[in-house]
Image 1 (tube, rainbow, N blue to C red):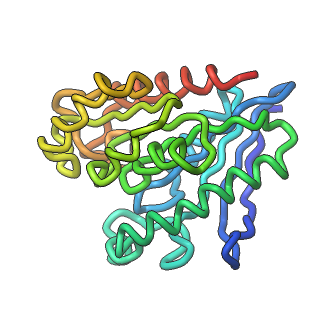
Image 2: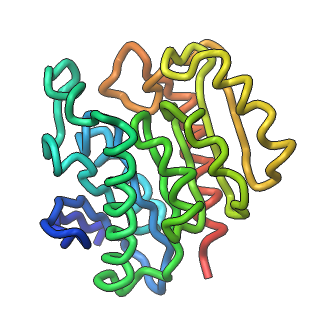
Image 3: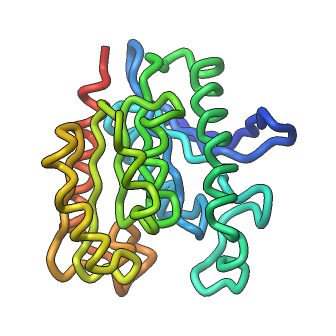
Length: 235
């Protein structure tokens, strides 16, 4: 039968609704879910393809539009609206926490295959949710791929016990050396956290649509890490 794709609307707890791409696997029994926190470009073809890949491996995947309050929908690279849609960043990230929590609530209510345990994977702008999701939004794990401004959230790792995996390239202009150095020391203090930094890999390595930065090898590693975490969330 293959995976099943649908575009739905989620009722926001603070009023209004937002779009979410949901993919369910061709599987029997209950399975974990992966919630994708997109880059500033939104739920575009690259994000949908990653969601499809998780479903092909037997997991539910959901990709909410975290930018519905400003400029909804996917935007092409170079679109002049990408810069303002996520600003002011701290306020937008905080507002998105409610959307991530509402997406998790939707899965529990509406997806009978869901076993109640979800991880989140964040890309670029969505990277902080890999920390915030386990910290206080009810997520069982988090993965960040070329996340931005993560130094603002390093202290939120305190008190977490869930698996968290953070991955960058050392040529990531959105994660300068002081950020990488700060995170290199994290696993010694937090045994639940992995940090991987790849040489000569650029910002945006997960996205084939970003031809200059795309790294098939690093993307493969990141997906294997994420799938390993998902397998650990099976009942």
